[in-house]
Length: 605
Image (tube, rainbow, N blue to C red; front, side):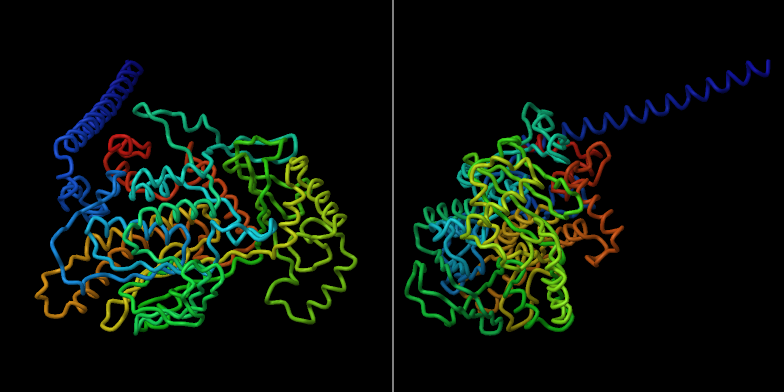
């Protein structure tokens, strides 16, 4: 009887637990289905009126407080550009003269967005001056060994695509046509053994009848070239002024001017003199990379304890990049690949990316020799030079040391380096154009990436301070560790333009002090931009380095490197690694559906 009673109690307990879990699951499913139906029905019924209400989207998730502004909401709810036409005549004093430092992807996308809104009379803009220290990326290179400082291939993922599409689908089509769609990734441990880390099949899990769009691999020269061609074609009013070979040496945030050191050669204006001042400008935007002159100006002119930034060289890591005519014949021509050397202690890896036209880009990453570091003393350097004579010549010392024992014009030296490369990376054997790639590598100096971290991306809203902002690597650089630098930079530009669209609203002509009101609106726009993008930049920095970017002990550094690799490859799938930085859709998914499978992205189109 006791056993029967015990079994009965166990059965009742099991049934009770089962019923409770079933009811809970049924309620959750019902709520999810109801919310999904309500969300779709609301969008279908309300249309654009939903986006116009600054409170409507926060009604669904009141605690998130993400993208509260009208322009930001519509940017993420649609790939169509935000165009709010205003035909009311305004005082010319409201017109904006904007300087953009840097003609990289972020600077050019920002120019596209500003020009778009100016053409639609949403933003009164008189001029957009773009200054770039390098030559026009569309110009022919003087030598096949010179890559013009834009040698590497970038990967445009969902964030970069979505940002470019805020201009219009035609611009994205022009960029996409110059890139190579790819979602494959292989890790080659040896010549005969590789692991397929990601494949096209991973992207074929169709939701709502559509697959996930692959990333686009594109050279920075081709990306900037496409953006420049479209920018010039669309600038029918002549508001955009491009200045190449124009190095900004100083930015004065008190008199709103920039100082230029300009070469007349290859400058499309040819009317500018070296060492001149340009301005005054209503807004100065720094898209000028990790060594930003605009960021230096913010440090100089900002009040105490308002602007803080850190920059450090990522020693001892270094890299060199070369281009080849065709992908290596022993490798998958449509897959990104990480190749480990035959001698694992060599400390050099090769990262191969396919590009449009069947070509390839090879990035060799390694460790800068001790004698090449700035911290080395002269005595230590002499001692190392004596010791190096007896050291074995290997690929690492040839690629990354500053010695010039190999002459790029000497065919026997080039052949010797090529043989060293094939010995360590046999998969590269037979690659068309490998000899020229070796010459490219021998002609380059080793590059060392930098990391940048800022507490704000805009100038302080004080009287007399020129409104200024930072985008991309000028605000947050990870030296390529995250693989999200270009995407984040373009997203910054779109967010900055959205802030201007939302908060820069010219008032009536009888405004007593238009310049003061104008500057106040600009500061408000930049503050909104900074509030939106600083958390993303800090998250990207922490994801890349952790430990506040400080140097880690060897074991912890190895663990951190492996964790970053797992995060990049698996992206949190199957519980391995961490998810990428959340987008607006991910946040809504988590809040409403309790998952990150992308239902919202499909529902919202």
